[in-house]
Image 1 (cartoon, helix red, strand yellow):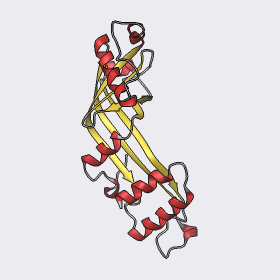
Image 2: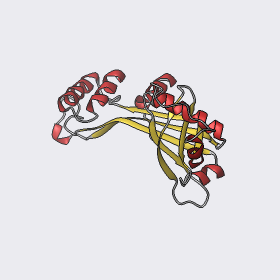
Image 3: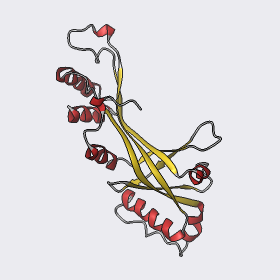
Image 4: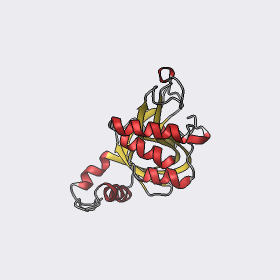
Length: 207
């Protein structure tokens, strides 16, 4: 991924804070003899530091690849929107000759993968995800010994993903003047598209 200096994360806390507010991405794994990697969408829970946990169905085609080479990428993209050509024009330039662009935030994580198959360890991993997604605790703790969990646990495998590298990008007009960014911000607020508010928040935060 191309990351210009003005789009790079300002420090580790920026990408960590952004990722803490996200919990769905794509897990990507490759392997010998494969033309293309396997890409698996998944919910996950991030501990705010360097560990992510998730689980997938046992028939998922990603397992042989992770067993062969226990490394993967996890990519998350959000806050994206299209910036029209006539918006993305420097002050005084002809809007009819403008060049459109995309605004977005993304974090791409490299990681070591540990596969979790022990029933008690899987139950603990699932509890971590449940505490993240259902903090009200309405769902009982997952049990490796009691029904129905004992019967269902063999149908999944867990993943503990330890972050070893990060590529983070916050592409929100960092190469534009303050005047240009404010004009684009006004246009985003006026348009009010599905993710325009999120992109606008990032644009102003990064400004």
